[in-house]
Length: 391
Image (tube, rainbow, N blue to C red; front, side, top):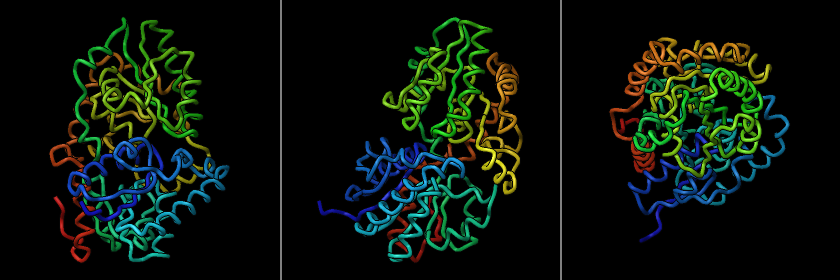
């Protein structure tokens, strides 16, 4: 078979790696002759990508967190840009992590304006800093949006955009036998997800550890499960070891993680992608987050919505409790989590809204990875007709 066009994909954190892995697999199904290069983690590597370097170098968030690692980030930015330009791909696909990936796209556009640029995950301009879309339009041709209301924001500033659906909606339901096998022990099952970045774990981990310890003091039969992101495995396991939890490691695979989520009675998780994973599992949860005071002060001045949880945003009510920044204390998280562990009305209300939100995010259509792959190919094949809807 003749070698096909080369696509260059860049992801800099676990959530982007998952998107990239499923996108590469879907693109291979549509066009087996395609070739791939770029930067990603284990899921993109499993799909056939040989990463340029270890993407854990990029797993930081927030101004205060980035500053100490700025020299490394600049070096990796230059290295990645040079690699893209040397390979001259048919398209550059940047995946989330805009602080790094979009800087690469901007530099590539300045040196090689003929390379088609596609960004996967629209920036949340409906929530804060709407000017980001106009700036991004200078060097991004096309956007793959996870939320149904995002395309107009992108198209208004000159980019094309397809709603492809949220990837959480295409993950298969866990094996009931695997879920049942985890439902052992005399007490309730709690899942804790402290984040995938070092800064998240450092600030949020001690709060969640104390919450779990207090619950264990109340009920010695409490089972604690902690999914561990590859990027912070050492930190998380050291921090939570005194609880003797079951650590769910990346090598156990996404099926084991989905089963552990479904087996939990309730969860306390870092605000972000994992909250939708919990919704897909049907597991009631509390969303928690802490960042540096500087980052928090900047966000407060810019944010335009009153919730960071997509389920709350989509359904229009605060069904999932959020303990953010100063409100992220052991007392508050424990107060929000306790009624969920015992079931009842609060847990049932969350599960009902999970179903509504997931339907709106694409659960009833083609798999998001397939829609994303077809959108990418449409842009490559028909650059002058990019505004046509892709289904």
